[in-house]
Length: 161
Image (cartoon, rainbow, N blue to C red; front, side, top):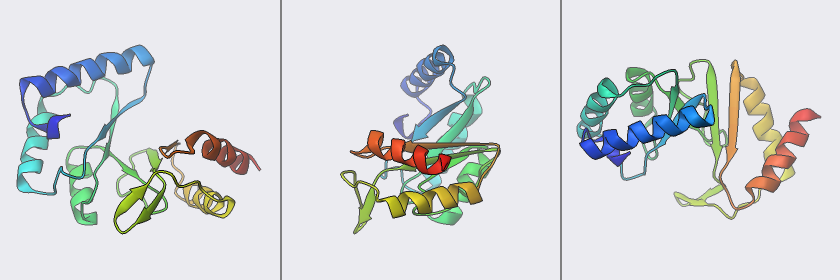
Protein backbone atom coordinates (compact mmCIF):
# COMPACT_ATOMS: atom_id res chain seq x y z
CA UNK A 1 0.00 0.00 0.00
CA UNK A 2 2.45 2.66 -1.22
CA UNK A 3 4.95 2.07 1.62
CA UNK A 4 2.13 3.12 3.99
CA UNK A 5 2.76 6.75 3.04
CA UNK A 6 -0.15 8.91 4.21
CA UNK A 7 -1.26 10.04 0.74
CA UNK A 8 -4.67 10.30 -0.86
CA UNK A 9 -3.88 7.47 -3.26
CA UNK A 10 -2.80 5.13 -0.45
CA UNK A 11 -5.95 5.84 1.57
CA UNK A 12 -8.10 5.42 -1.55
CA UNK A 13 -6.61 1.97 -2.18
CA UNK A 14 -7.05 1.05 1.48
CA UNK A 15 -10.77 1.89 1.20
CA UNK A 16 -11.03 -0.27 -1.94
CA UNK A 17 -9.25 -3.12 -0.14
CA UNK A 18 -11.61 -2.80 2.83
CA UNK A 19 -14.62 -2.86 0.52
CA UNK A 20 -13.38 -5.99 -1.29
CA UNK A 21 -12.56 -7.72 2.01
CA UNK A 22 -16.15 -7.13 3.15
CA UNK A 23 -17.55 -8.54 -0.11
CA UNK A 24 -15.34 -11.62 0.26
CA UNK A 25 -16.27 -12.15 3.91
CA UNK A 26 -12.59 -12.03 4.87
CA UNK A 27 -11.48 -12.18 8.50
CA UNK A 28 -8.30 -10.23 7.98
CA UNK A 29 -6.36 -8.22 5.47
CA UNK A 30 -2.75 -8.90 4.53
CA UNK A 31 -0.39 -6.00 3.94
CA UNK A 32 2.62 -7.47 2.17
CA UNK A 33 5.40 -4.91 2.13
CA UNK A 34 8.36 -5.18 -0.25
CA UNK A 35 11.93 -5.64 0.91
CA UNK A 36 12.48 -2.01 -0.13
CA UNK A 37 10.21 -0.95 2.78
CA UNK A 38 13.21 -0.54 5.04
CA UNK A 39 13.35 -0.63 8.81
CA UNK A 40 13.69 3.11 9.46
CA UNK A 41 12.27 6.06 11.35
CA UNK A 42 10.56 7.18 8.13
CA UNK A 43 8.80 3.80 7.78
CA UNK A 44 7.60 3.94 11.39
CA UNK A 45 6.42 7.55 10.96
CA UNK A 46 4.49 6.68 7.78
CA UNK A 47 2.98 3.61 9.44
CA UNK A 48 1.95 5.64 12.48
CA UNK A 49 0.08 8.15 10.29
CA UNK A 50 -1.41 5.39 8.12
CA UNK A 51 -2.72 3.21 10.96
CA UNK A 52 -4.01 6.24 12.90
CA UNK A 53 -6.19 7.27 9.94
CA UNK A 54 -7.53 4.02 8.50
CA UNK A 55 -10.76 2.32 9.40
CA UNK A 56 -10.04 -1.30 10.28
CA UNK A 57 -13.72 -2.10 10.58
CA UNK A 58 -13.92 -5.63 12.04
CA UNK A 59 -10.79 -6.84 10.29
CA UNK A 60 -7.54 -7.98 11.79
CA UNK A 61 -4.52 -6.80 9.82
CA UNK A 62 -1.58 -9.07 9.07
CA UNK A 63 1.72 -7.64 7.89
CA UNK A 64 4.66 -9.26 6.14
CA UNK A 65 7.88 -7.31 6.71
CA UNK A 66 10.89 -8.50 4.72
CA UNK A 67 14.50 -7.99 5.73
CA UNK A 68 13.69 -6.43 9.11
CA UNK A 69 15.40 -7.34 12.37
CA UNK A 70 13.49 -9.41 14.91
CA UNK A 71 13.38 -6.41 17.25
CA UNK A 72 12.10 -4.14 14.48
CA UNK A 73 9.33 -6.58 13.54
CA UNK A 74 8.31 -7.00 17.18
CA UNK A 75 8.12 -3.24 17.70
CA UNK A 76 6.18 -2.68 14.46
CA UNK A 77 3.52 -5.36 14.96
CA UNK A 78 3.00 -4.54 18.64
CA UNK A 79 2.89 -0.78 18.17
CA UNK A 80 0.27 -1.01 15.41
CA UNK A 81 -1.58 -4.09 16.76
CA UNK A 82 -0.88 -6.33 13.76
CA UNK A 83 -0.48 -10.04 13.11
CA UNK A 84 3.11 -10.93 12.23
CA UNK A 85 3.20 -13.03 9.06
CA UNK A 86 6.06 -15.52 9.20
CA UNK A 87 7.51 -18.37 7.21
CA UNK A 88 7.63 -21.20 9.80
CA UNK A 89 10.75 -22.59 8.10
CA UNK A 90 12.55 -19.33 8.90
CA UNK A 91 11.14 -18.19 12.25
CA UNK A 92 8.36 -18.25 14.80
CA UNK A 93 5.77 -15.45 14.60
CA UNK A 94 6.69 -12.61 16.95
CA UNK A 95 3.24 -11.22 17.72
CA UNK A 96 0.35 -13.50 17.08
CA UNK A 97 -2.70 -12.13 18.87
CA UNK A 98 -5.06 -15.12 18.57
CA UNK A 99 -4.28 -15.84 14.91
CA UNK A 100 -1.21 -17.30 13.25
CA UNK A 101 -0.65 -16.52 9.59
CA UNK A 102 2.11 -18.40 7.78
CA UNK A 103 3.35 -17.88 4.24
CA UNK A 104 5.54 -20.45 2.57
CA UNK A 105 7.35 -19.02 -0.44
CA UNK A 106 9.77 -21.85 -1.20
CA UNK A 107 13.41 -22.26 -0.28
CA UNK A 108 15.99 -19.58 0.38
CA UNK A 109 19.40 -19.36 -1.25
CA UNK A 110 21.82 -16.52 -0.56
CA UNK A 111 19.00 -14.26 0.65
CA UNK A 112 16.78 -14.93 -2.36
CA UNK A 113 13.47 -16.77 -2.41
CA UNK A 114 13.34 -19.75 -4.78
CA UNK A 115 9.64 -19.97 -5.68
CA UNK A 116 10.20 -23.07 -7.83
CA UNK A 117 10.93 -25.11 -4.68
CA UNK A 118 8.69 -28.12 -4.11
CA UNK A 119 8.51 -29.02 -0.43
CA UNK A 120 9.63 -32.54 0.44
CA UNK A 121 7.58 -34.83 2.65
CA UNK A 122 10.15 -34.31 5.41
CA UNK A 123 9.95 -30.51 5.13
CA UNK A 124 6.14 -30.57 5.24
CA UNK A 125 6.17 -32.83 8.31
CA UNK A 126 8.55 -30.41 10.08
CA UNK A 127 6.30 -27.48 9.22
CA UNK A 128 3.24 -29.35 10.55
CA UNK A 129 5.12 -30.01 13.81
CA UNK A 130 6.02 -26.33 14.21
CA UNK A 131 2.56 -25.06 13.33
CA UNK A 132 0.91 -27.44 15.81
CA UNK A 133 3.42 -26.44 18.51
CA UNK A 134 2.73 -22.72 17.96
CA UNK A 135 -1.03 -23.26 17.63
CA UNK A 136 -3.39 -20.43 18.51
CA UNK A 137 -7.15 -20.17 18.13
CA UNK A 138 -6.74 -19.98 14.37
CA UNK A 139 -3.87 -20.70 12.01
CA UNK A 140 -3.72 -19.93 8.31
CA UNK A 141 -1.08 -21.38 6.02
CA UNK A 142 -0.62 -19.97 2.55
CA UNK A 143 1.67 -21.63 0.04
CA UNK A 144 3.05 -19.01 -2.34
CA UNK A 145 5.42 -21.11 -4.43
CA UNK A 146 5.29 -22.68 -7.89
CA UNK A 147 3.92 -25.97 -6.47
CA UNK A 148 1.42 -24.33 -4.13
CA UNK A 149 -1.58 -26.53 -4.96
CA UNK A 150 0.29 -29.82 -4.73
CA UNK A 151 2.20 -28.75 -1.59
CA UNK A 152 -1.02 -27.55 0.10
CA UNK A 153 -2.83 -30.83 -0.68
CA UNK A 154 0.06 -32.89 0.71
CA UNK A 155 0.23 -30.60 3.75
CA UNK A 156 -3.48 -31.19 4.46
CA UNK A 157 -2.98 -34.96 4.16
CA UNK A 158 -0.09 -34.88 6.64
CA UNK A 159 -2.06 -32.62 8.99
CA UNK A 160 -5.01 -35.03 8.91
CA UNK A 161 -2.92 -38.17 9.53
